[in-house]
Amino acid sequence: MSLSLTVVTHTNSRHPRDASACLASVQAALTERCRHVVIPLDTDLDGFIAARYAAMQLDEVVAFVDDDDTIAPDALRLCLAALEGNSLGVAFTDCMVQCTDGIARQGLACPTYNELLRYPAAMHHLVAVRSEYVTARSLALAQQHGCGIEWIMKAEAALTQGAVHIPYIGYYYVKHPQQEQLSGQTEVRQRFVKAVKPIGTELKAWARFEGAIVDYHPDL
Image 1 (tube, rainbow, N blue to C red):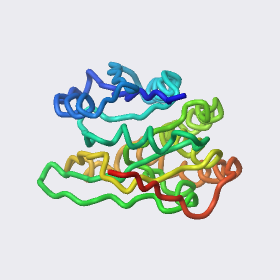
Image 2: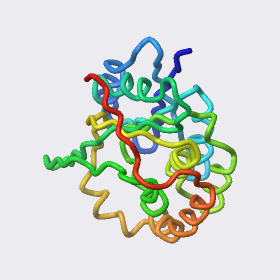
Image 3: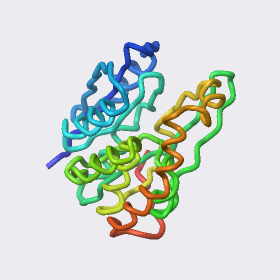
């Protein structure tokens, strides 16, 4: 039986962006087993945490694509192929970080399960997550600390059911200069910094997998 995948893009009317490139890239990557859902949000962080968790219930496999980012044409097909015929919780691609000042660099792929315990952006790529392996404890942990829902959900599925890395640049993440300027100043950022260690400790207690994350080598 073939898996189905929903790409979720949350938009925010208080911080509107041109989502045309995002929409076009996802449309070009859709297969017959994929769909794209755009969900407008106008809420605070607590509402965002709940919305991100709720979106995970939309399909067998869910992947988030932010409205100013794009994905590669084969990214969704490869993620589904990597999850077929096994019980793995996560398949993720490589990522290219594109700064709006013109600089681009390839993001580092998450090499081990241990990285997921200490580095929230370890899987900041196109990440396809089997929704059945994301439970209410992810929501509770994120709500307890007021942050981290996407990291926690990805980590729960990967640490409990295993993950596979696809050596293919599937996600293009746009980084704005103001993100660097504000990264250490916002209340949310400061809260996240304080929460990383206790969240990582809790995730470690959930983990069934450790060591290196294996690669999936499809016929590209």
